[in-house]
Amino acid sequence: MHSFKNIFLTGFMGCGKTSVGHLLAQRLGWDFVDLDQVIVEEAGQSIKEIFADHGEPYFRELESRMLVRVATRTGQVVSTGGGAVIARGNRAVMRQYGSIVNLTASVETIAQRVSGSSERPLLANDASCERIRSMLAAREEFYADADLRIDTTGKELAAVADQVLDSLKRSL
Image (cartoon, rainbow, N blue to C red; front, side):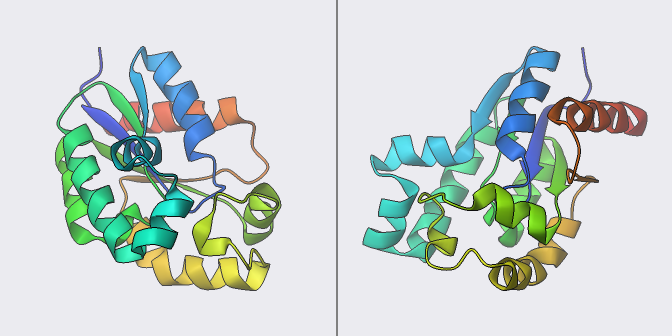
């Protein structure tokens, strides 16, 4: 039906990867895969517990292994964790097996969307706009290494999904 193999959604937490991913998968008749959920199932622990018990480096290594496992299948919309794009190898895997779509949002929108979430270990004690701005700046070059970037600020989920599909179809 489509000549792209998979769609990999990247972006900071709270940018809509999971919500938009479900819509895209539904519209394409594809599977939706939440990479963080795959990691949780593999580890038998929540993301928060993995960070607390083993640290971020262990989590990132597990994330890379699970990405390779997931990526080799086709017909999937894969929502990646916000930091998955930091590793060059992860970006190479995503590019080899599909299209990389980076979802963005304003700092204020992200802060509003993630406030009150206890499952965000990197923002556990500080979901301030300053902290988010700092983390976004540190990851910008990695997020920019995408086939497509879409700002979700102030947009309905359906409109974002339409924009992703229209843009990917035009690029084929």
